[in-house]
Image 1: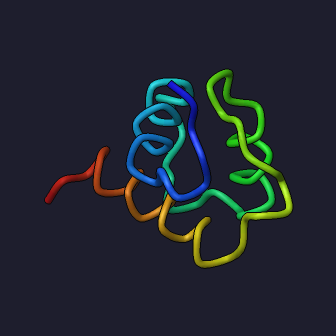
Image 2: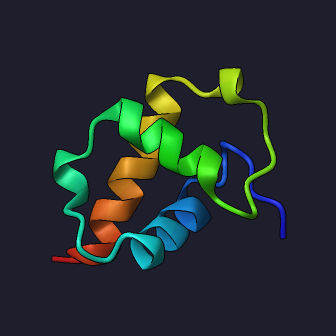
Length: 68
């Protein structure tokens, strides 16, 4: 499966598995951007991301680790 920037939920799931000790509420967008690019299944252009997409990924990750 190939991940694209718009696949916020799937990216968040993968990041939560890859970085289980990280609290996504405190991840900087620069780190989040780099971590997404480092995902094995990620296949999209780095410059296609933006604050809105990174925020969507971060919010999905937060919801995944803290569903309350």
